[in-house]
Amino acid sequence: MKLKITVHGVAYEVDVEVLDAGDAVMQQASGPLPPVAAPVAASPAPGAPLGAPAAAAPAAPAGSTGGISSPIAGTVLELKCKPGDQVVEGQALVIIEAMKMETAIAAPTAGTVKTVLVAAGDNVRENETLVEFA
Image (cartoon, rainbow, N blue to C red; front, side, top):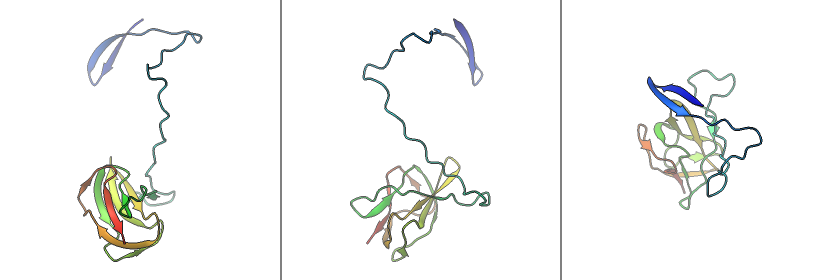
């Protein structure tokens, strides 16, 4: 069956094969696709005012340096800690914006901040270390 599909103003003619429910569907040579993890929503808590930082997202696992890494690529909006600060588990340390959504990066455990490796306005990559602990 031929179909005409328009995407962003560009028309494409495509051939579509309709399969019956009993027909086998070809898989990739390497086998079925691996399962995909569900995305982490970074939306405000219910009842929180719009524009408020999102609920603290789980921090990336602490690296060998005893720090936290960014779970996403984005822009640092706000730092909520400085070297020497005592922090508690789950305390928001860095707010990152990605795709117009704010994500709070939280402390995985209680401890003392040794070094803050980013500043407000910095672009960060996924898995980049943000804060190190003493």
